[in-house]
Image (tube, rainbow, N blue to C red; front, top):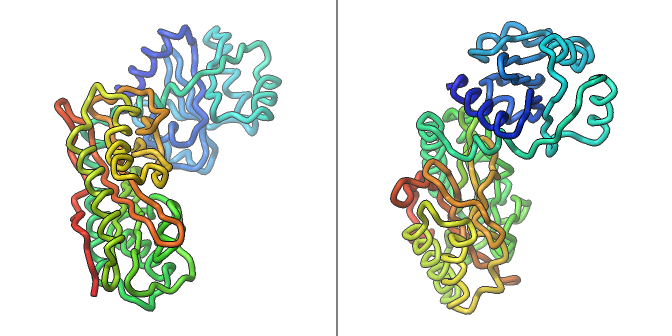
Length: 357
């Protein structure tokens, strides 16, 4: 698998006239090599694939980075990189411009005397857009764990608990069942706080006759899941049922129509048009979804700015919402993988309006 990724990256480098590429982004380093340590650099040339790291990882790195030369770098890693480049007669080095600070760029330039530093734009992230079968299987397992966590939490939800109590239980459950952590800081937002799209769990005590919005995921074997469900504790009012029904309609419509060949903008419009038609367009202020993978937010974006065309193997979220200040809000979110003919849902939790007496 790692060799395939190296070959694909070399093909992109050749198209862009790059002799060598230095990978400094930690997620891209893990994607390319399988190495899970906290420090290291990846150097890809036409002939060599090198993982440079320090003394701490010289036993671990060769075990994980199959197909790579593992080199213990000098105290200044750029000294070792310069030796490799000059030894091969290479004078141009691509770097990840989104990952490098200006201070690092200046430092690299001084250390890499005689090397022309060439900015590159998300070359590895382009590879990460399309998930292979192994990645999708891991993401399915992460989604399954998110579903199990939701079922577990439903059995515990009751008035009188703090939002933070629920968030802690989610964290403990995913860790006990194989995840390294949650995918991001868990959102538990109840009552009027459910109108906050990213209302992180607070000390608020959950009451009755109100929404509880739960947004969380499992970070499992290096990949994220992401699910949102909104339930009602107590008796739902007509407004609860109304906006829940509209969001569910928008989400189901999007799930039925998202397919390869659409842009992220077109996918976003499917859900957004439903909410606009019901008069709540001003209360849906975020995108319909985002890419998902080793990071919780990746390309492509399902939003008004989503220019990337969806392709089979991409994994995205579908998460429309309505948020009414002073009352509450609803979001319903699933993870899907784009298939040859449409999409397949990874998360399977019920989306019927769940009312907990």
